[in-house]
Amino acid sequence: MTTLTINNKKYDLDLKGHEILLEVLRNNLGFTGTKTACEESECGTCCVNIGGKSILSCITLACDVADKAITTIEGLADGEKLHPVQQAYIDHGAVQCGFCIPGLIMSSKALLEKNPEPTREEIDYALDGNLCRCAGYLKIYEAVIHAGKEMKQLAGTNKN
Image 1 (cartoon, rainbow, N blue to C red):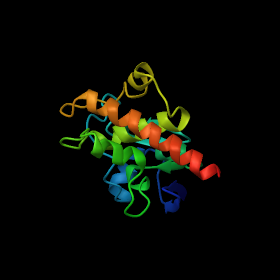
Image 2: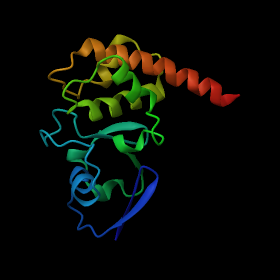
Image 3: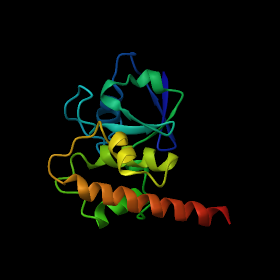
């Protein structure tokens, strides 16, 4: 029996040891916000956050992350209230077809948790493994910068 902690909830799974995290999330647990595309670590659509880092779930064995907290796109919102990164992507028109957006949002969130005021180069580096074929990267950059400001402001209010 393997226990995975996903979006702050524990799931006991009978895994054989060779299952890819992406497959377990989508097929076993119904977390379909994490997308399947290249399955070769080339596009970033399958990114989830583990330990504050954006990781590619298509090349990660589920059993290798059994002792870590996994966050999927479904775990970002607080009820009906979207996470600042999700809201910024919508507000700045950084979504078109939406297929790549969950991975981009997860990578953006990982960056902004470490650095809420990234430079353009830091955003480039953090999103380097994520491909978007239709939204246009300028709107994505704007969304990341805006979300960083929101997250910094929220962090400041939570300290008081």
